[in-house]
Image (cartoon, rainbow, N blue to C red; front, top):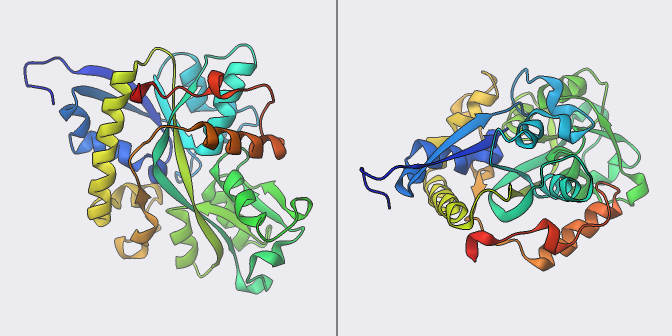
Length: 306
């Protein structure tokens, strides 16, 4: 713990969406980072869950998206996303030229809930009925990766189709207008969809990963992760206290009672194992979602636990 006379170490991190950055926000606002001797500045960048989010978070080149471009320019030290998104960005920052290298430094603390949602008027009530039907996602984000994970238990890979229908808010509008028959959403937009009367076909948790540049040392990362672990426990004990972060992203669409608190799941950060890397990297390669040539050694650095 730090004392009042000690200088706090400054760390700049980025966030996009509350459901997968919740321990970060809680650690800051409850003083858990300060207790570890850290002054953590959170840069809020556009995420697809924010109401009326801009479209920079949807660019096909992921390194042109706001969060990634800020990291590339050195404006932040550390970020977190869905496990497969961090895998793609860490791999490609190390095997393709012109990017600031990022390493996977932990399996993250948030387990974001995603769901595939349809509507009764389309007569779709189970995942098998999505055979060859495009599901609306935002490419190379959690809604894309998790949709593939959920559906490959029910369909052959060649039967799984997707389309880019914009942000979560825009996807729901496309569903309401009949432009698509199914959409992939995360909280709070799953709850918005349920409030509007849409049907949840299947849902799953999506683990976060934490990424950082070589400049952020192991002891500082460990302090960050310890603070996030305290935050995860605080959220587990009283998720309703922190639901307002998600309600704010829905922009007035939800009242407190509309949010299913059981979907807010978090866990302490932990080392990213070789077994986890091999499994996840091979899965992303199998779908053509990232580049070949990466290794555990040039992509992962568990220096927080060294």
